[in-house]
Length: 317
Image 1: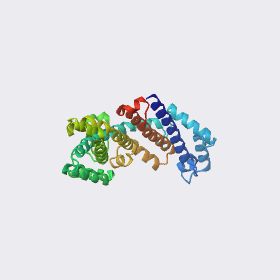
Image 2: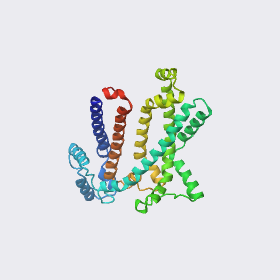
Image 3: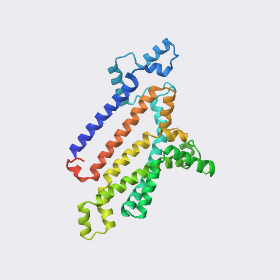
Image 4: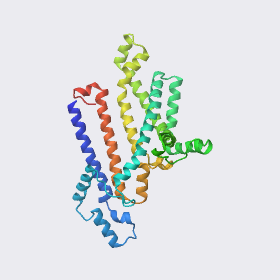
């Protein structure tokens, strides 16, 4: 177990460093002047020079990179060029929208997908299995932004029972805030649930073909008992992997959904920063989102040690 943890922590740190290097190279070293990008092609020379001085673009590349990484570690994300406030304040104000939305969508997706996957696997090659697979195929084929617009058209325009967009704010109470999240949560969760249901079904069917399942059945264990007591836990590793990837997507990939529903979250902030050419915000948001994805995958790796007892003795997957 200790060797497993050391390997995973080393991989985590190395991956984070590589991510910072890639983001820095793309936004600050590749051809193009960041100051010119931010101010536009018609900016005056003295204004450009002043911004380059403010951003430290006149310093050597390695100093700029190490200073930026050091600032990330200490939580100093700089000042937004557009909003003239610390980037950390912008992120903290927006994460209270994006993070609960991702949690709600992941919870709804799991509550739908796991039972459907188990239902399909326990009724393999039966009408219920065909229904679940058809449902999942439709869900995979429909883009979530188009599904979001259909939900808005039905529940907001036609039935007028849910808001079409915007966020009531947590100050208005949990009820109005959750009501603002309802349609975005469904739009994010259902397409992800269809993928997770297919993975759950496939993982269970693979495990049910293993020798230890046949042995359990030979000892008198019923099919349902073999599925719930033996197969389900062993099938959780690929399911947990997909859940980790999906939560990363839900946290870092809500740009379109937040713009469809006009939610003031991280996704909408990065979209606005790109539109306003605020590279300071873009750079720090991109690395924070990338870091969130990397850390979530690290946590998923740790869950392997809980699910798979072989890892506790120093084994690997």
